Length: 357
Image (cartoon, rainbow, N blue to C red; front, side, top):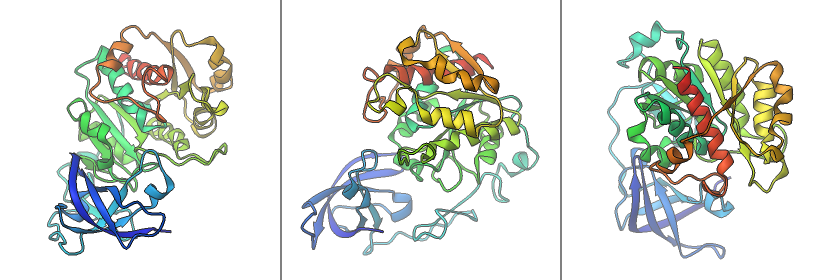
């Protein structure tokens, strides 16, 4: 289940909030191993790596050639363990794994937000944009701020992809555009921690004072190519949570003219399953104006009209907002020019959320 390797740190590379890249030379290599690998360490978990440190690595992602997660991951610096963390918190995430982490949840006794969250059970109509991929987040934020630049946008990160929020360079780049990050479920490393999407949304609204929340999984995702075998199906449950808490669900549709897989061209079958089968509460599903009619978006969404409201949103100025983002947009290896429809659809969802404020 785990491909263990041992190596020595030979260089420090990029770092961003919560993570640092390393060059590691492998020791006692197997025939299939390269001589050196690019590794990623989370200092809050393993301490600060230094050149010359011996490291224990998990190389599963590297061996599998995962596009998003193609790193060897540092499990420990066994010769130089960090000091015990002396901080409040009793909530365990990545539970009963060797690297389970203890965090302070936003609503537990020692949290400064306990009082307000203990008495809160409503989002007060806050727009909640739901998306099935992490790559939609910056585009949604761009759409919100295109019309409401002062709106406070919080990101509620679910655990369908990466568990540590620190893995995301996008979150580091968007730090000054977000009111904060709430990591929910088994995910951890956000500005606030929450038990599930419900408490995460309440924390976004009442602790971070967000005007708009965006719910999506962290970087990476799990997909088997079957109708139900995709971690982003949980986006439908996010719609239900937002509606249950008296929020205003806004669905960002996964629309593509560039994906080579037929099931993802036009409206992805993932969006159709999540919003058509899983989401039991109504949402505003946003279509950008002028979408290529050859993509068959209207026909694909027709069965969803019985429950949801299909909203067409103008796109004037959104392209400029997307290009002005401080991150390089990418989804499934395709950038803004290569998959313009995808990012425009996410930005349109953000614009619609801004219109509800």
